[in-house]
Image 1 (tube, rainbow, N blue to C red):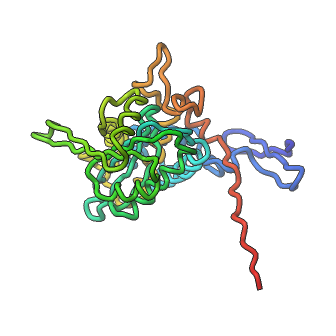
Image 2 (cartoon, one colour; image 1 turned 30 degrees about the vertical axis):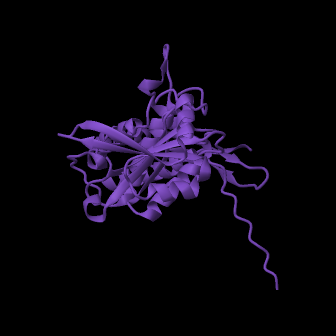
Length: 318
């Protein structure tokens, strides 16, 4: 690749490069969300920062002096890129404890029953999987399958804790197999406070539960505290999930895009307060060994994803 030419823009001249193999020219932003944008890259980054701060789409449009539909397209473009970034970099070797939960959305969720499935790896605090959809067996199966693809292999039995949702047992037995120790946690409330917690081992044995508890550095007993803390973060940092929101969700895809941006911000950019070691506060990706420093939106959005390899077609036999 060599420099080919330059072209004028509103913010100065930009370089164009030439590929000496295919003899095609391209700009450096090809394959990134900044490709063919009419606004500055800092405006796009600032809009994504406002999205993860819980600012509604209309308020972002007023702050950036753009149309609300432009903010929606920016969020969709950024979410698709961040999803590719997660699929390429978010791979964990092993897990000790996983916590799964569902969160009901407002707006269209009151009518269409849209729920947010999430999973967190307790030791590294990595937000491992996300899915938005109805609370059905199919959605639960697709969510757990997506969670399974994040981990390369399980060298030891992994502890999975959830609430009293009926579909998790058959789905975890089908996807994870015998290497899963599933504990269902039942919380009893009184005046909106937990007064008693009971747990039942549905997959695995008590000896496997003791083995996982001996390896765990966080949970002394099965609980769902870490995924509940993540649910609180989603409520505060996503405008569609606020309890009294001026911006109710009308399409589940909008909620998916906003949560994909928040998930990348949580895993790679935002230092986690519980991961403080001396003077260094790590991000979940740093704790998992994926990166050695916190990233920024500009670095992630400048990353060019590799080309999608086409699936080889089977030869037809006559």
